[in-house]
Image (cartoon, rainbow, N blue to C red):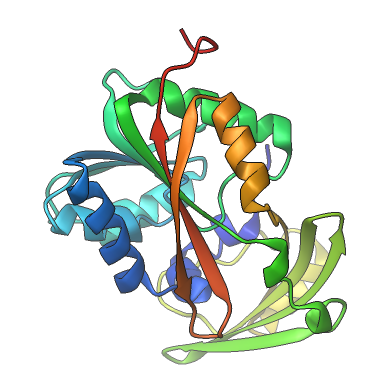
Amino acid sequence: MPIRPLYRELAPFYEVLEERDYSSEVSLIASELERRGCRTVIDLGCGVGTHARMLAERGFEVTGIDLSPHMVRQARRASEGVTNVRFLVGDYYSYRPRRSFDAALCLNWSIPVVERDLARFLRNTWRMLKGGGLLIFDYEDPSDIVWSDLGEPQVDSWRFGDARLVRVSVASLRGCVMRSRDVYMVFGKPRGFKPPSERDRYLARWGREGVSVFLDISNVRFYETSHLRRVLARQGFQLETVHKIRTRRGYRRLYAVCVKGESAKHG
């Protein structure tokens, strides 16, 4: 499976581009973990490891896995000197740890879009957890769709030292899946950034001008909570509660807290 530019060349910027309220998220997650006495945590699709690192700094023992070696490299670099955290390259559909965990996380809207893949993800996560273990993931409800933004270019810009990164996004909706086509333009040479191969004429021209351009395509599914509850139950999880955090841009992030139960499917 090819790795998207956001998870490859743009990995050094990922934490800033996501614009998440990491402090509020980690406080919410830590309170749920502490309430149930969870100490060992696996972060599935950990990205650059911000959640994992911050939880480890609070005393939890955290393992982060991600499909992108570029993201894992960033996570290890950012976590140097932090004890109780490690990062591995792995696929959350097939990863088989040697131990079971008290809790699993899947954040940054990393749960699968296709329902059969969601079932595969849940089955493997069920295997990783101890009895009564927690699964916490974030998602969005169809009521959170901003209809006026669909089809309209959304422009964001960030500065990194002497360099600037600009993103132009156009989103479309099919069913409950939002497809976003994002063009990233990096002007200048920010620290830690390596431009793509410039073997062909087009990229070579951009390289001479001090500009690198990437097209990144993402898909996010909007799940109704009642539907998620049924899917979770079929795979041996009980949806216990849903928390809400308002983002800086005013929309909601929903956080499902699920408990592993017994299931004949997983024996």
